[in-house]
Image (cartoon, rainbow, N blue to C red; front, side, top):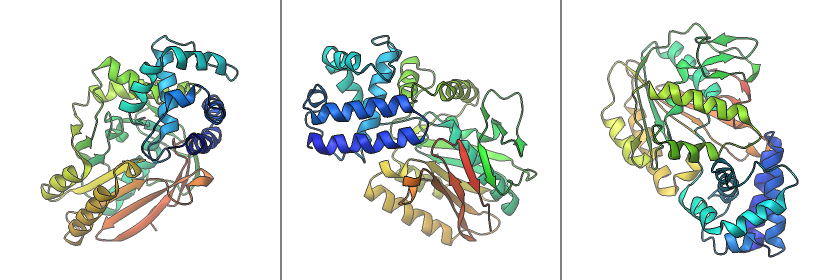
Amino acid sequence: MSAKTIAHAFQIQAQFCQAMNSPLTANLLHHAAKNLLANGVMTKLLPHWRGNPIADALALRFAGAIHYAVLKGKLQSPNNSQWENIANLITKEETFLRDFINRNPPQTNETGRAAAILPALLEIAARASRPIALREMGASAGLNLFPDRFFYDAKRWQWGEQASGVRLTPRWEGETPKLTAPLFIHSRGGCDKSPIDLKDEEAVMRLRAYLWQDQPERQARLLAARTLALGGGVDVERMDADDWVARELATRARGVATVFYHTVVWQYLGDERRARILALMEEAGRGADRDSPLCWLRVEPDDAASRGFFPIRLYFWPGGDFLLGEMEPHGRSVAWRGLR
């Protein structure tokens, strides 16, 4: 892959970072792109990337590697004028940084995205009048398997236990969620190709590395959610998503609304797995009934995502396909429609 192509991918990601209130990360990626085009140290760090730098989130891998170096004490937290220090770090720690980039595809397990998950579950609970079985694809460390245990304060409305260590404060537009719906979680489960062990401090450090350095509130939420998840007793299974979905669909309980969901995972699964999951869900959906409904909740980028919001979509069998609203990728802002 040419340096020009990689630099372009970095510039695109830098624009997203700027739009999502991370000027430090945006500046880092702009400097890295300029260095690539100038045949600088970046060309030695990323000499022959074989994949698609956008699909592989190469820019985020690089930003994560730099943050990991900060967490490891190899570099003081950079500000917007420290590219020279970062270039020196790349020269001194080339193997260390390349190892992180090659071995650690992006994982954030962004708890802010529960600002879309929880309202969707309330809609499902109100419509289905059934306990809910939560099943998350690409669950990473499993932090978003417990959205019902977070506290939500959108100013216009609040939901959950105020004593919860995980507090979400999204800017809210549109309809109010169905706050009085009886939400009862029957069971929880998740899969990931490379799950994060929350008991492993080194693994948690790698997870933290993908949270942008100038957004400390995300770090605080992650650590609070870690404590909650460790007490929840749910382990994320190491399985490919399509195999896991096939098994979970075949064994789903009667009298329960089974909700499969994922947030910013779909792009990483590959064409074959995506096609198989779609076929499995559609086949199972045709057999769903009102006693045991099947739901598929997705918060994923689409062609309109360049304006900074991801659609929140819900397949509900029997029922239909619904656009519930839109969300800023880290859950800072939600425009809600609900089930219409």
